[in-house]
Length: 111
Image (spheres, rainbow, N blue to C red):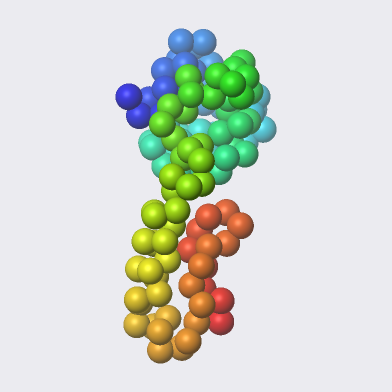
């Protein structure tokens, strides 16, 4: 089961609409919709959803099983791979730009 399926399943079991969950979590309904379509969200957003659904952080795997809440050492190869791919882009190499990640985990290029 995907984490998105869990959020939707728990929400529907509790008879909560997307709009109501968004209000309880302090996020937009569009964000709930994106999560339920298996798109990535920030850790803070996951935390808000966990609490809004009535779970504690120790029960986070019931809402987001196997998510990127894994220790950083499990994610380093993925981050390095992404950075290497971005650095190979010709427009980045030609301009001598630096590729990396911004504070939201998105790929950023400094010029």
